[in-house]
Amino acid sequence: MGIFKDENGRSYGDWTHRDQRNREEANRIVKDPNEKKWYDQNFYIVMFLLLFWPVGIVLAWRSSWPLWAKVLVSILLVIMVVYLVLNYNATAALLS
Image (cartoon, rainbow, N blue to C red; front, side, top):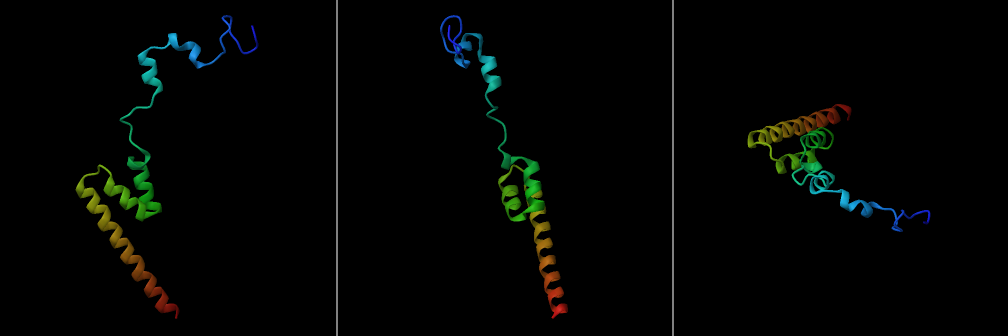
């Protein structure tokens, strides 16, 4: 019996325990096929809306959010961008 062999002469590995597994255990090991991708999860959508809004708005519109939420977020972002642009132009005019 070698250092990497069991008492039957087989090499150690996960395949040596196949007969101990059943379908339920195999399903537990495999990821859930209905699990959302990271870009479909609300946490990441809101994070991108706050940190990098162009990506966040695209993710929001691709998500399963209701239409009213998508429109509301879009309007709020447009208002924010317009405010920032006008505020920047006013500040630039004062400085020159």
